[in-house]
Amino acid sequence: MIGNPTQTLLVIEDSDEDFEALCRVMYRQAVVNPIFRCTDGDEALDFLYHTGPYGDAQIAPRPSIILLDLNLPGTDGREVLEQIKQDENFKTIPVVVFTTSSNPKDIEICYRYCVASYILKPIDIKRLVQTIQGFINYWLDIVILPDAVSN
Image 1 (cartoon, rainbow, N blue to C red):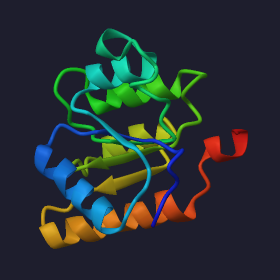
Image 2: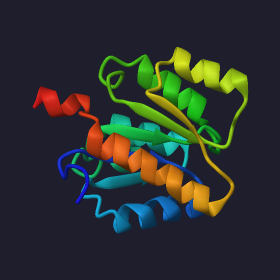
Image 3: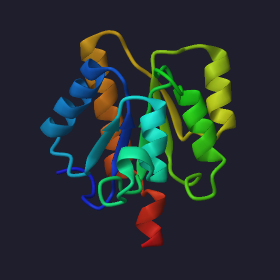
């Protein structure tokens, strides 16, 4: 088993295929972290701020870590990242960008907003699985997340 059942992962990803690949690898590695998914930036902000359909904090717990795609419909990942990192309540949550964008401007902007990591999504399924396994091993097994020390 990998992870911590008290530490929530919020995945902000519009691609069903990429999310399913993530879930398959997590299942195979017996990840115990609760996983929540938002498919666009507006939904993610509703989740974080407990607005709209996420008005009840019970169905939208504070994430311990966020896996964020940049290219989202509506409010995109760059805007979500900017809002998270400028908010005192959320800025200590590690955000790992997981995107197809290799644009140097995107990389620079994300690190300016203090992302914890910037990971390129490989097109090849075998490499995608390896990349997801690396994320899981590092972020859910090795790293001590900020909320682990504040409890």
